[in-house]
Amino acid sequence: MADLQLTDHVPREADDGVWLACIECGESFAPFDTVRYTCDDCDGLLEVRYADLPTWEDFEDEGRGVWRYHETLPFEEGVTLPEGDTQLHTAPRLRDDIGVANLRIKHEGMNPTGSFKDRGMTVGVRVAQEVGVDRLACASTGNTSAALAAYGARAGLETLVLLPAGKVAAGKIAQAALHDARILEVDGNFDQCLDIVQDLAARGEVYLLNSLNPFRLEGQKTIGLEIMEEHYADHGEYPDRIVLPVGNAGNTAALYKCFRELVKAGAITEDQVPKLTGVQAEGAAPMVEAIQEGNDETRRWDEVETIATAIRIGNPVNAPKALPGIRETGGTAVAVSDEQITAAQRDVARQGIGVEPASAASVAGLRKLRRQGEIDADESVVCLTTGHLLKDPDAAAEAGRKPEPVPNDTDAILEHIDDRSSVVETVRRQASKAADSPLIPLVAGGLGAAYLYRKLRSKK
Ligand SMILES: N[C@@H](CCOP(=O)(O)O)C(=O)O
Image (cartoon, rainbow, N blue to C red; front, side):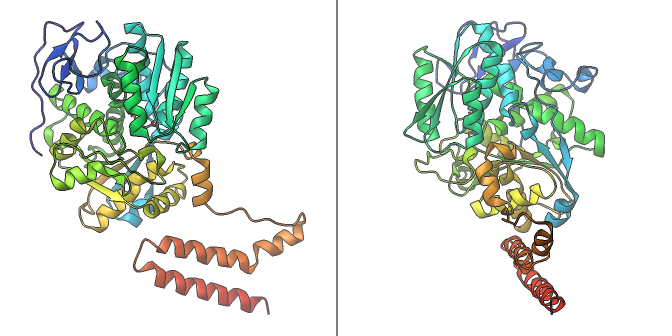
C-alpha cells in the first residue's frame, strides 16, 4: 500500500478538538460557527478532523450502532431511529461459487429507512440542529431523500428533496412522501438536481445534506468500524478487501477516512487496511474511467443510464476523496453490466438476502474481478450491499421468478406444480444463471433436457 495521508495539527479554530480541514489546501475552519460545505479559500472538499482519535478499547461497553463510536464523531449522540449495527452475513454457497476464501455481506439495507444513508443522516441532522437551520434539503436518486425525510421528521425540521423525474424507484418516493418531505421532481438527472441544491444552499435557503456535507461521511465511516470489529471477532483477522457500489462516492471516501483514522490511532497497521474496490454500472462509470486512465479527477458524464438507479450518477462529488482511497489502499474499480447486476441480485437473494440492484453491483463486481484474476482465491472479502430489496419492488419483480396463475382447486394446483411448465421454468432459470458462465450452459442444457425427458416419460 502507498502511504496514507496522516499528517495533521490542531488549529486554533478547533472547537472541543474538532475542526474542518480542506483536503486541497489544508486550510482549517471552526466546525459550527457558520454553515460551510467546501473551503472558503479554494472550494476544495472539507473533512472533519479530531485532535484525539480513539482505538478499539474506547468503543467497549458503548452499546450498538452508529453512536457506539461517538468517540470518533463530533457529538455524543444524535437524532436517532436508531441506525447501524447491520448484519455481516455469511454467504457460503455464493462464496464457493465465486471462489474466494471468505465472503461476508454487510447488509446496509437493514437500517431504519433501508439504506446506509441513515448513518450519515443521524450525524448530519444533529449538526443541522447545532448550526441552527430549519430547512433541510438534498438531491437524490431516492435513498438519501428517504433518510433525509425520516430524520428531518424525527427532528421536527422542514425537508425538501429534489429528484430526477421518472428515475427514482417506487419504494423510495413512497418513503419521502409519507415522512412528509416536499418532493420536487426535476426535469433533469441527479447531477443536475445536486447542482440546484448546491445553488439553494449557497443562497442560504436550505441546509444541504448530501454527502458533500462532510458530517454525513462521519456517520457513514461507522460502516468500516463495524466491519472491522465484527470480522476480527469472527475470523481473528481483518478483511483483505471491501467491495462496494459507487455512486456519489461517499462511502468510498468515508471508509478510506475510517481506515486512516484507525491507522493513526494505532488500532490497525497500514498492512491491515482492506483494499477498497469500487463497482459502478457500465452506463455510469466515471470513477472506473478515472482509475483506469490514472486521472486525479473524474470527467462528468452527462448521459447516464443503468437499472441500478441508486448509482445512476455521472459526477461523483466525493471523487477527490475517493480516488486516493481506492489507489492508496491498493484497491481497484470495475464496471459491470445491468445483466450482471441483475444476476448478482438473484444470487444474493438465493442466499436469503434481499437487496436493491445497486447493492448487487458489489457482488457482480467481485465475481467479475475474481474471473479476471484480479482478486485472488485466498482473499477474505466483504461486499457492501447498500439498500433493501423493497426499495425497488419493480426491479425485484422483474428479476425474480414470475407468479403463476392457477385455478382455484387443489387437484388442479397439484397437477400444475408437477406440470411441464414448471420444468420449463427450471430450465429457464438454469439458462439465465448460465448467461454469466461459459461452462454452465452445457451442463444446464444437459440437465434440463434429461429432466424434461424423464418428466415426459413418467406421464405416458
Ligand atoms: N444514491 C444517492 C445519491 C446521493 O448521494 P449522497 O450520498 O450524496 O446523498 C441517493 O440515494 O440519493
